[in-house]
Image (cartoon, rainbow, N blue to C red; front, side, top):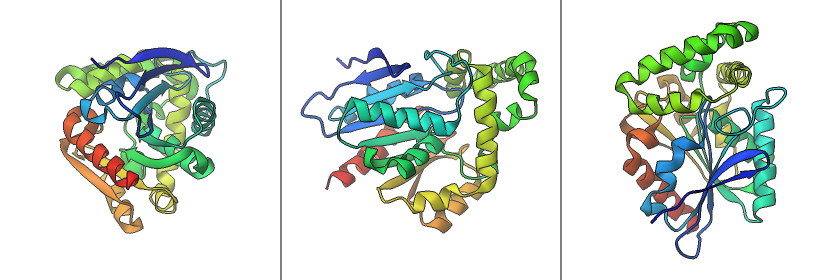
Length: 265
């Protein structure tokens, strides 16, 4: 029986699962804006990934991790995650980042390459069309978002989740996050996406890279165009939306496992 354990490490709430045999390595999952490691539990528990260790942290201000006195930038999230993994183990790990976690994962791969064995970017921001809830948050000033915008967004998310399990899960995590943290990281994501530099930066990495998108409800067409132009290897999972690992879990695990087997050769 698969057992996911919980701990507090580096001031973050962490979900872990050990390998069932001699481990082939470790996979670290980094959640997106408003999310938490809860969203990855189905993948972490999947029997086809039994040979790997799995860890997923709620970054500060999100999920079950404590809120900070002041919200943290995406770059600071990346620094904290890289420092945490450096203390946890000696070998480099496979980073799987979803949405904002894809942006954090890119930062880690660029700035801390000795901590990275490979990088899987799932629906990470690449172009302005990838901004949805982040752009809505930026329609409010930081003060107005804390006062009323966050509640407005939660109500909208609750409606979106009426007929969609992925959004219902998102609501469960979002309800626990720090509105100040959400607003700061939203602004960063919008600015990052408008710069349209992510595809070229991923192509320049010196580790194996895979971008995974959901079709037809995931990354914007402009994003897929930029990825192809830069020569970034990508895989589309369909039919799926922004959470392809929830919408089509077995398909996502199949893609991830094939990539893992490839980097082991």
